[in-house]
Image (cartoon, rainbow, N blue to C red; front, side):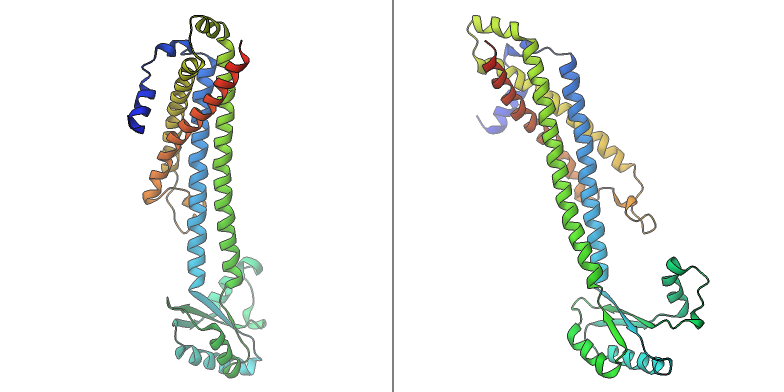
Length: 300
């Protein structure tokens, strides 16, 4: 018999040993509720991890193709160095676009820190040039050498100091997402183990009677394992469905909403939560099997 055939026979429950396990009671409700709650949290942990990764990747890619040139020069030299810098950029391979920022744009950049009434005319604010690179990129070392000769006050900033923290943050958040899913699985296993042990302890007399008529521990354990595995599967499927519905009701991603509106799953990532119920069933199977044989060895 194939693996799927064995799994189907196991879930079908052809054995009459199922009657050993009470179909209702606090252990049944506890198992279903625990599996549903943990699956719901797993969906959000997965969505949060994917959304954070997408956001960091988008920011990193956007910064990777842009750069800023700051020209700090005496007032009488600023205009000439600006012209020289633009001339250098026009002849630099890998530069798709270069344009100086006007007063209004520089005001907008400083407004969050200094307010809307910043007197640009009274302050010596350096000239800024926005550079957009092609996919091939720019020879940064060569460009900086040319700028040093043509416009000594020009400083090329390729946003590396902004890009690297985003890459590190994405890696850490991916690890935190995996750690969260691992902790959720561990908590699910612990709760199901406790519920299975409680059910076995409550049916100690029934187990003793079954042993008197020749029932093996594997026969008794199989009933508990199947029942609790099915409960975990049903609970996890319910929690996953509720979690996916809650994710679907979140606002769609947009530039204004930023991170909070980007939590929704996208494309094929909607298929990933469908793996949660089978994983929960596998966790429940392993936890219940361990708890059943451990408790049966204690029961005399």
